[in-house]
View 1: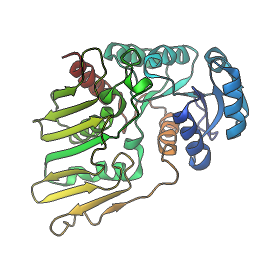
View 2: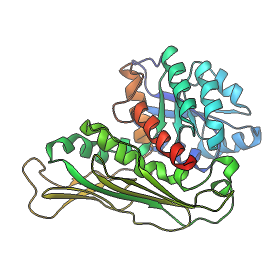
View 3: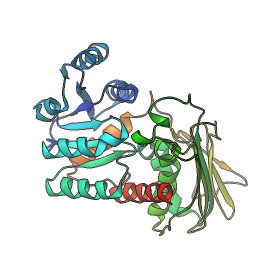
Amino acid sequence: MHDETRAPLRFGIAGAGAIARRFCRDVNGHARGAEVVAIAARDRGRADEFARDLGLPHAYGSYEALAASPEVEAVYVAVIHPEHAGLVRQMLLAGKHVLVEKPAVTRVADWDALVALAHARGLLLLEAMKVMCFPAMRALLQRLPLLPPPRELRAAFGSAQPKVGKLFDPALDGGAAWDVGVYPLWLHAALCHRLGLGCPAPEVTLTRAPGEVDLAASFTFDEPFRAELGASIIEDLEREASLSGEGWRLVIEGKWWNPQHIRWQGGPAPVIWPADIYLPVEGGGMQHEADHFADCLRHRLLDSPWVPQAVTRQVLGWIEGGLAG
């Protein structure tokens, strides 16, 4: 258990790719309650280079060494999707708390087993859904119950990518749904969770050829309110998201998955919604998920109020079911 009298929480990173570098820069540049102290990769040279570039005191040439390290309290798992489940299990068995990059895993059964293992060992396991930890998103979720019920959500995440590499490899769980579809699905699920609303599975439409990954995906919900969600790895999609109900409409401006400005649109804002939400962040914002993770540990929580394990499970189930259907 992280010692609540000692700050910051010491993270090690498993995987030395681009997302790991962004996490390290954000956390070590801007976090208040967490720091990255170690990097591990299967290639020791790559780990050493990462540590030199980013000023880390510890580099390991295996994940086993990271799991055994007394310098590390929590591990941020940032390897390719198919390796998440095995590596999370390895770190939990070694007594490390785990923050795992999205998608946490690609099979609901794996998530259930890992959550059960984490709880049994008194460890924290969360999906790194950074959008839910941004200050502006937390402010939105806190205020949302004050408004009349929502009627419609529109959100998408898509960008044209070169048709090479892991995103386009079915063996590596590539495709639009797993790569970026998790974001709008998480937004919808989190809104429903905050409002205490049940949410049935969506209608899923995929763009894919036999033997290929899904190049685009759409998810449509009719209950508990209308939601039209999109994902693509071949097309740039609308970056703003909107949520509306009777007499009100909110727009998450810019890249909605990095929420910083949520604008009231339409008539005069009611007293219960006194102003636009404008909470800018420094860097890429990943420090907020690290700080939230550390805060959960300081309060001895085995789950998160903002990134609940049940919502991760729900989103994983929607995608797994949609891809299989």
